[in-house]
Amino acid sequence: MLESEELQAIQEMDFETAFEALQENVKKLEGEELSLEDALNQYQRGQALARHCAELLEKAELQVRTLAMDATQPIETEE
Image (cartoon, rainbow, N blue to C red; front, side):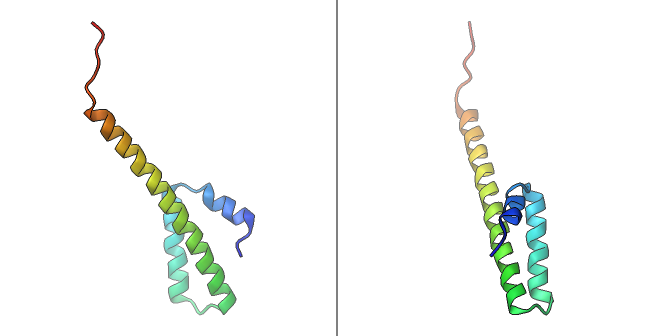
C-alpha cells in the first residue's frame, strides 16, 4: 500500500511530471527483475499516477469545453 506522503506527492505533481514518473514506472515494471512485493508496489504507484494524470486531463478538457462554449456566445458590447 502506498504511504500517504507518496500519494500526497503524486497529487501535487503537474501533468508533465506525473506522466514522466508514470513512464519511468512502466519501464521499471517491464525491465527490472523485481520481487513480487516490489512489483506490486510499483504497479500500485503506477495506478495512482495514471489516475492523477486522467484527473488532470479531465480538468483540462472541461476548461477547453468551457472556453469553446464561451467563444460561441455573442460578445455583448455596451452602447
